[in-house]
Length: 208
Image (cartoon, rainbow, N blue to C red):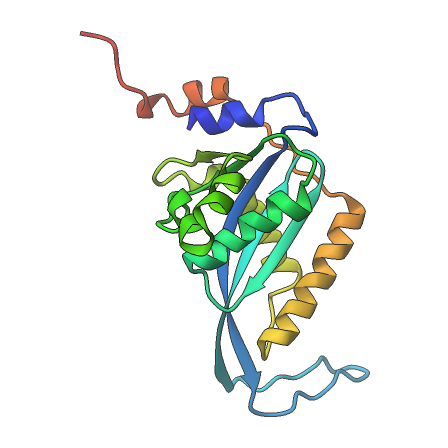
């Protein structure tokens, strides 16, 4: 826990950005009846029945200190998908960075081995040399600020029926563009000192 909080307290340096990574799934739902549009004195009416149309995965990348985020919509969340996400992070999102710190949880695909599954050893090594991973502790995923972004995305964009992958990707892209234009950043105030006071029970006791 303290490792993550220490990363968050670092002075901002564009050569060494801190990026949070998390993922979530979204169920795709098709209408079985055409909704009735809103009219004067009547809200929009949607039939309670729906048709499941599979699921999609949402990778969330965000740099909380600058108000930047990118959401990658994928059909799956395999090790290969994760590896290509990191390659794009290094080569496209931060091509001038000397080292990128990635805050993420301990999902089994969140491993350097995923890069070696997706790319030749030399390419995998090249990408890894530009990355430094900081993992949230077990049951401590709330420390990952990407969860906050996913929550905002869910409330502002995904809180309705979305019928298919293409529509989801378009809706998410529009949300991402607007939020990046606004440069909405996260005011994280929970520090290491706070953790030692408020979560003192999690620390080992040195008393005999």
